Length: 291
View (tube, rainbow, N blue to C red):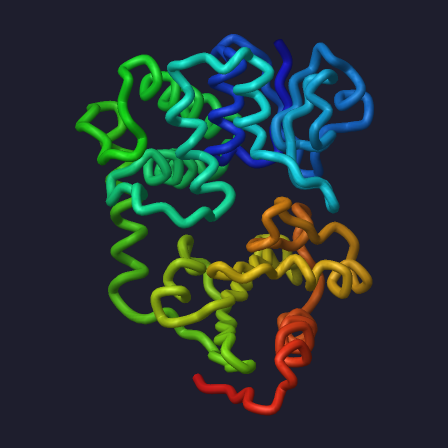
């Protein structure tokens, strides 16, 4: 089968594994999402690449504005007849993808860490990221490994987990530089960084809402991530899309991001919208900033 992907993350790779993706299957990476022709063709499997909820057309996604849908892997799981081997992985993916509170989140090394490490080591090849991710998750399912436990030692996974560990160490060596602004009871952090995992690092520094700006290789463009720790941030989308089309995020509303092609908005413009959205909502009487 032909497969189209947009972002080879845990949800995408797990959906591919559940649907039986093989190394021999042609995989196309499209940063802007699947084409209209691909989305209309049931013979083309589009994973988190558009067509939210259109599983009858082979489209498994949940990012369209206004859609209240489960993750792509959950959709694939139901479509495939709920294969028992993947039930626990689907539950785990929902906790990660929907940012659900769970006492079962495992410490490092975890399934999420493994997928992150794969993406780090194959950063320039999204198709390879997808294939390796599918292969790893299929092995987890075949061996009956509980994703809510620490991963056992598997030789082929070692390089990926070592890279993930190295990236975590970078974040833990020093606090991430950030501007902190308090609006009512909400503490908002703004940071410009290339470090992966910055949102979590800002949460650990006390932020309720993290705004991370990462410069892209194409000059003048940025990747923005706006995430809330048990705080919905999707209310900012209307204002952001008025300035620049393409901002979006999953239905749970606790994380949104800039267009996949990158954003041309300066951080000052994004910052103003975030502060307007949160400080106006709280009355703005007791907001203050600190470095």
